[in-house]
Image (cartoon, rainbow, N blue to C red; front, side):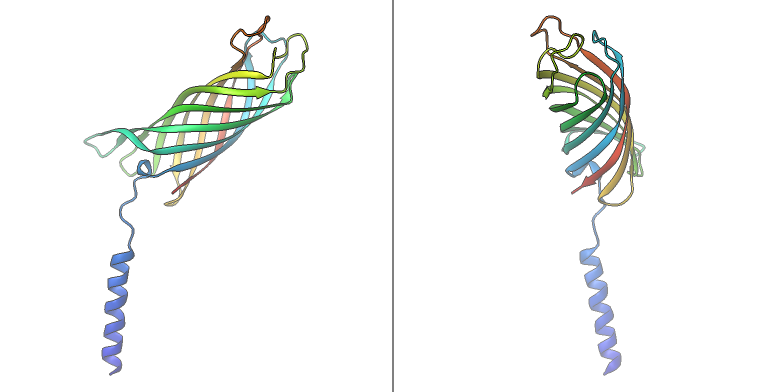
Length: 195
């Protein structure tokens, strides 16, 4: 009797394990939220202030929109990306910036699906707390665009680490004269949660 009970238990456990075992996970087939921060330094623009910016970004990436599979098992994929950014100006005439941007996320995944090289170029709109000082931003409404190039490393089915170089441009598109645009360059790092 105990032998039959034990055999039944093993059979049920084996069947359950086979049913509940996850299918091979492909990161580009999931939604993802990225949480990133870092440091940006002024590298150009007409502003007379030296800027040092701490960006805080939360991005949503969609599942794959377009993709290309290579014979070695690697993958090139394009996903939609929407980013909400909140910048704190550690140095400069302004104190904070809040914006939203859209961009494609272009990702190359290695055959093991454990790491990727990614890039994004996009833009959007935002609001800065303009101080109405010579050399500072001319108004609160601001246009932005950015470029990002980095690497991502998968830790688990749900979590990844990210690190990148980032360029950001802020200006008002010539709506005020002068229009002291700000170009900044630096790095970001963060985590990503896939679901």
